[in-house]
Length: 344
Image 1 (spheres, one colour):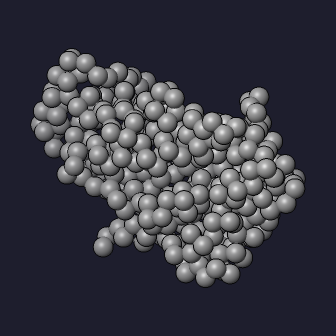
Image 2 (image 1 turned 90 degrees about the vertical axis):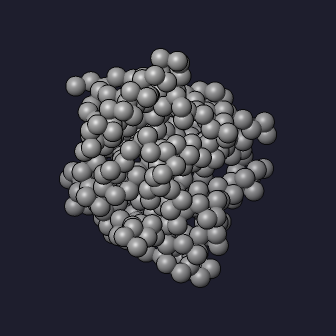
C-alpha cells in the first residue's frame, strides 16, 4: 500500500487530530499511526520556537514515520526526517514520552531513507526500545553550517539538526535527553563532529568508515574538496579554502577535536580498501583506504589525549560498502545502548 501525506496546518487538520487521538484511545494495541498509509495530524504540535515546524506526517511502513520539516536554518525549505519508532511509541503522548534516542546519519550521495533501504535496521530487535532518528542532511551537506564565503546562511545543516530538529523532536515526538549518534562515511564525520562540537548532547558516538581527519594530507584534502564540488557546487562554500580558512577546517576535523571526544565512548571502524569478505571479487576502494588512514590517525590522537572509552575495529580487507556498515552498526549497538542506559 502506498503512503499518503497529510499537509498541515488547518482547522480541518485540528479536527482530524482530535479524531486520531480518540481512535488511538479505542485501539489499545496501536498508536494513532496504526497502518501503512494512515497519518496522525500534527498541527497542534507543528511549531518550534527554534525555527522549525512539521508540515506533514507520513507513515511509510511498520514503525516508520516520515516528518516533513520546514527549516529556517535551511532557508525555509522543507526536508524529510525518518523516525523508526519504538514499541509503544505514541505520537500523541507529547511530553509524557521520553524515549532514548539514536541518531543515524547517512553518507554522501544518500538521503534520510538510506539506513532503512540499505540495512536491516528496521528489523533489529535491539532497536525496538529506542527512537531512531534518520534526518536528511543533503546529498553533499557535510553536517555543517556552510561558510558561503563568509556570509553563512543556507544551508546550515548543523543548526537544523542540533538546534531546530532536536527541540522539535523532544518537544512533540517523544525524543528524550539520552542520545547517541552514529553514521557512515560523511555521516561518520557528522557523528563525531556533533558529539565534539555540542558537548553533552550525545552520550556516545560511532563512525563507520568515517571521514575522520580530512586535513590528514594533500590526498585527503583533495578528495573531500572533490566531494564539496559535487553537483556543480563551489567547493569553497562549505568550509572555505583549506589554507586561508584553516581554522574553519580544523573546527570541522574530528582529529583536531579529539580532546572534546575523550570523555565519551567512541567507536571507530574502517576497512583498508582491499577486497574483503563482503565484497565482489577484485573490488577495491581508494576512498576506504584514505579513510582508514584518517581513522587510524584519529584513534592515535584520542589515545594520546586520554580517551576513556575508545573502541576500534580496523578490520583489514574491506571496501566502502553497506554490508560492512550494517555489520558495524550491530557490533557497536551494545556500546551505544549502554551509553543510553537502556534498562537502567
